[in-house]
Length: 303
Image (cartoon, rainbow, N blue to C red; front, side, top):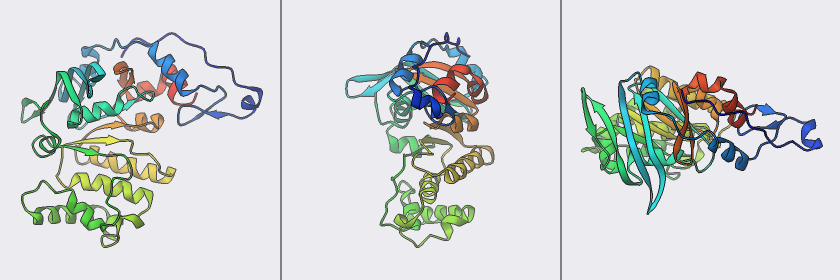
């Protein structure tokens, strides 16, 4: 666990704001108002001194996915600076932090969407560690078993639910293989089976998110990179989506790395939590430890 930062002050709310509890960075409520810009400044005070030993310990010194000293970004702009990450097989990791901290860039780098300036991304399979840094996204999915679940609105609205699932198998050698995989999805999720012949545009927000997750499952990946699973969803659908992810992790052994602005929900779900700032790692601990940390609570949990 990284050294905890010193307590810092927040802005004093106006009289009107003080009368009504204001929401914090996300879930929860607080009588203190703090802007996103203030969150960034406060997290920057934490520094980025989390060691490789810290992240290795959280993965029980047996990483399935490992990132070492990664420098990555877009074009010539470096977003991640000597970033380290370790997640064990079947573990879940939630990345939280202010906007622009580099959370989605980590997912993009693992999947092959960024420029890698230096460092390595490795995965362990059958006891052998393989460097996958330079593989393209299709190779990451087909050869390394890594699937990326995009943020909301990634379904094909005019295609049926069934056709959307078939699209998830676009790398399979035979179309029938994708159709068989789609049937396995329908056996698992009655909600989608009931809608199989409907265009995806008629689905509810929660059903669309389920379809996005299910489409990623068609290739039977070992690793799910999940970008903002709760975005745009009503609370009842948020619970449903996290129940689905919990089942995939704990009953099917999927390794999950997610970015989640709903920090409370994400840390409640995850085995491991990372707090990012300015392309580096400010804090790392179990999800439960970060939920109990007063600075994480003040900056990200609304009190």
